[in-house]
Every structure is written in structure tokens, then in C-alpha cells.
Image (cartoon, rainbow, N blue to C red; front, top):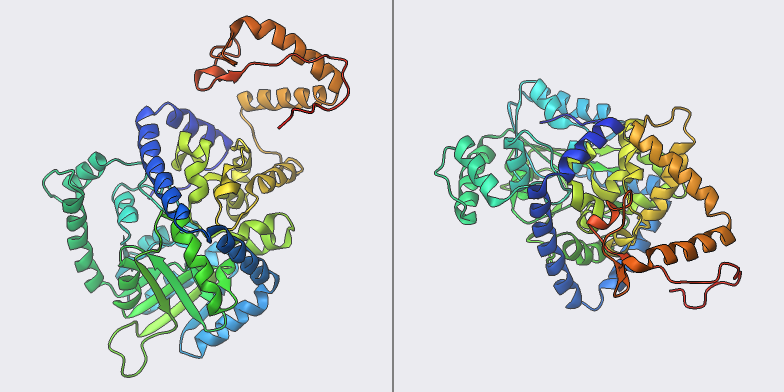
Length: 477
């Protein structure tokens, strides 16, 4: 798997490549367009959707307010049923615990369900360095693993690929005849993965929700691979961030109602797994030994920040990526982080350090992410907060020359906008100069050096207004 690309220079280099990749843009738009259409349909069929969003948000707010006690309650409940619980302060601690556990049990083959925390702590690389075979069993994750890539989306890891790409990959890696038929490609992957499940000594999955009241881990999925990874191997490890805990089992329904509709455009996902401990005496299936690794890795610092803590409400549904104009233009790999898109731009600097401090600036602040978020996270506000905080850092972000020029220009504009009369005068002058270029209320092409702006969008024609007027406009939206 490719390592994380760090630093502003790497980001600008990656975005230059991906913006120029018209084929990538086509794949992203096709996939995202279909998802948003399907999401709109299921939301329209569920009038209570917004009420469920509000309920889910209230529960997250409550849970974060008493996170310490909920985590201890979860630990007590799980340990009472024979599960071993480990709190990892850092990615290294979590990684070392899992690797050490696998070594103690003589593990050679591992199957993994989908887990963003495992990507965050770079677990696969550590296990492979310890001479263990790790196989991703989510189909999208399996595809990108065969390509030695990181996932490019939180929910749809292979969203950047077309069926022709997968057909060629399976032909080369699995030795099957080239075909673009989805059923045949899926059947080929299933045949390989079934044998892998049966041979694995260890299974690893993520956790969508952890219920403190009952000590229940909830895993939501569509392919059944999470269920197989958590029940077939004798040794099972679940990974979760500290923010995944919720107080009561009765709270869960509110999240189930919104997660599938927002994340995958379904009324409900195919499988909702409830895991509460290892196999009990007399039971025929389930792991003989179970471990839960609860990862902090910067989340406590986020919790302590009154603005940033709201990002811990995130359900990892990926919806903010689907509507983000930046993500849809550059794709997930350009971010250089396992977490891409708007939410990735928030959590990556905390999880991985100031080498990712440029990501909060990779946003238009259009607000589409806030509108679609199932728990109404105010992502633009948090991004602005992070921009301010990072600008106050002792070691400033190492911006490339082009970005430094843009920042200087932005500072000049900020000073200019402090003078309302001057701004209005410039508006009148601009309206006069651009009037000959306007057609039907829009300007299709601006003259150089502004012509790049109108290559992808039209500029609304400026309206005339007396420069000396001090009163606010009454017709403003």
C-alpha cells in the first residue's frame, strides 16, 4: 500500500495531476451523481429524516459530554463477557498491540473487514512487516489493495475506478478472463475471499457504534464480509475511535435511520451486526477470543477544543465528500490522507500532524457538506477555526510560491474590504467595464488575467449601485 503523502508541496503536485485527469473526473461524477440521485429518493420517502438527524445529533452531543464514563461502562460490560479491552493513546500503541497479539497467537493469515481506524494507524503495513498475510475483504478495499493503493473514499474505496479498470485488474491479478460484467467480477472475488476466510486465524473489523449500556459493538455493512471476519477466525479484534460510543441501545435506531440513507442511498444496510463478546460455552460459532482496541490518537485534543469537538459527531458516512466541489475535482488520493474530503481536512491535521495543515485551506466553504451531514456538523465553521489556529502555529505551513502569492493577494483583499465606500465604488466601476461582456445577466468569458475563472463557470453580471450609498441593500438575499 502506498504511504501517506505529506506536505503542502505533495498536495499541490497531486492536485495538479488529478485536476488534469478528465477520465478521473468523469468516473467521480458518474459515481457521485448516481449516489446523490438515489439518496434524494430515499430521503423523500422518509418524512422523519430531519427529525432523526436532530435526534442523532443530540445523542452525539450527550455522549461526548460524558465520554469518559461511557467508555468505562462499555469496558466493564464487555470484560464481563470475556472480551479484552485495550485503550490506545496513539496510533503506534494501537498498532503495536495488534501486532503483538497476532505474534502471541502465531497468526499467519488475517482477514479484515472495513475499518478506517486501521487505515489511520497504518495497521496493514505493520502486520505485513511482521510476515503476516493481510487480506481486505470489503470488495472496494480488496480492489484497491490489489492495486497497492489507499482507499480514495471513506465509504466507496474504489470510487475512482470504472468497471473496465476492475476487469483488467482481475484479469491480471486473479487470472480470470477479461469481463466487465459486474456479476462475474463479484463472483471471482467471492470465490477467492471465501477460501481466505476459512484459512484465516485472525479477523479484524471496525466499529460503527458501541453501546455503553449493553456492551454491544455494532457493525453496519452490505457484503457480509464484516460478519465473516468477526465470526469465522478464532481470534477477533475490533478497532474503534473513542467517539464511537453511544449511551443506550435505544439510541441506535436514530443512527441506523440516517446512516444508510446518507452514506449509501439505502433505506437500511444489508447487515447490521451486534457483537457483545467471544463465543460462549455451548455456542457453535463466533471467535474463541475477542479484543477491542479503543483508539484516541488526537481525539481527546479535539474534544478539548470547543469548536473542533463537533467533528467527533462524524458517522463516517462519506456524504460530505460526495457534495464537495474540491473532492469531486481532485479525488481522494490527492489529499494524501486516509481521510479525504471536508471531514478529512478537519481530522487529518489532528491525527497526522501539521504536515497536513494545508488541508483546511482546500475548501470553497460553500456549505454543501453541512447541509448533507446526517448529524449537521458545521464543517465550514470548523475549517475556518482550523485555518485561524494553524495560522497562529509557531512553525507556519510551508506554502509553495504560487500559494504564497495567493495568500498575499488575499491579505490585500481583506484590507480592501474594510472600506465599504471603496468597495462600492469598485463595484460600480466593475459593472461599467464589464457591461459590454454581459449576456442575459451573465458574463461567459472574462478577459485575462481573470479568464481562467470563467472557463468552468459563468459570472453573474454586476449591478450598478451609487458608490456613496451607506445604507444596506434591501434586495440582498
